[in-house]
Image (cartoon, rainbow, N blue to C red; front, side):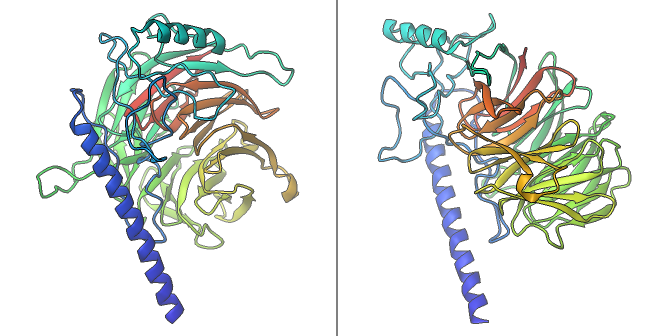
Length: 475
């Protein structure tokens, strides 16, 4: 009994330390934002996550606001002695464009060419450096975009030839807070995003906002403002009629997209919802939570079908869930560093994939359902062969190259590339046959928290701690 009490005391101490540290960081960020002359809404992070051993870290996934500072020609503002810097102030190269400068490559990435600077762009030396870096990196820009808005760095194939790809910015969708999640509709025409107190739906071709699904039941604070409540997961039903959301209120909601009303409120999780997915056969929803459980719900009736993880399940919070293309399997990534796969019909655990050295934050099935991709805080991706019988051969490939946490992963529908988003502010395309980096996209000023590939075209969406969701096309 004494040992158990000591464990509770230690857990409580750790939780208080995390909370105090996070609140101090928020106060510092708000203090710097107070002096900003920008008229746009202030981008703020979610509040610290409640709980002790069952709660996820304060940086999952919304609060990732402070990544490594970009390299600069002049010393950047902020604390010294190795302290983490907030996102740089919006220094606009062209006032008419009203676009803040993106983050450059992570510090120490000697093979990358950076083009970002906080020095005013009208200085001749900087302008020359930008042009030189753009040529050296092979960056491609659409005519409508500023030269310093984003940069594309091309890798090489397994045959050591340059990768022949072009990437362009399609739309940039400004939000009032961190964009925790992005997800396309099954027909590829609409994009859903999740942020503070709301989910939103946009037209993919134009970037026009079409609908907003606000959280009306958010409590008020003493000063009259509403408390933060982040929508951390979104997903469309295959027919596009329903939008599923998961949030910090521990509730999964099924929205009628046309009427903007809630069809079901699925109550059963004990902590925040971090991931949701809908089966291709439209029969069920799967949700993953910090309570170490994945739950299956009937999409039509809202009834709870099963709880996965009660036996031989995760020992820490679930960060990501996905359903296989055949609707027969459910995979989950967890803070306990393990990827698990369950059979939907029997609810039995059929795979336990171990190999990551840190928490797994994202999982995705391949288009044929034979492979599973995972991304981790150990800065790597792993490709797992679900047909392998020998545990030692289940990990087909590991992808190393990110300079910070891998927060989101996806397959392109053709299977030609696997894609990852990272706290190092980059999106990377990888060749799944050789684990080589095909292309790196630097298009955000902060962590790339969520990525999603359009199921019908060569385009993808990214959500970031810089309060923007962006859509990109590639060829």
